[in-house]
Length: 72
Image 1 (tube, rainbow, N blue to C red):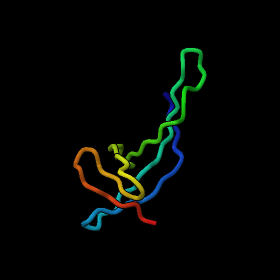
Image 2: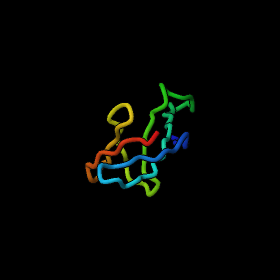
Image 3: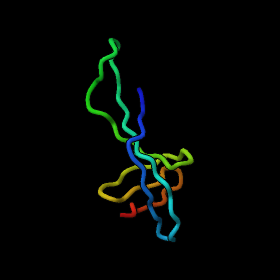
Image 4: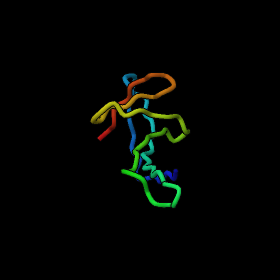
């Protein structure tokens, strides 16, 4: 699997803290080297913590459960 950085944005929690979030697209490959299916989008903080997309502009920090909202 190969991950490519395709975007980055900032998100804010309820207490006003701002988090830099990186968006990656990951492709899975078959044994013959061809791409298998659609790319998978994943999110991580700049420091590497995982982020789960809840829908629209809402995200959740996986380790702490803190909800963050994408800043337009």
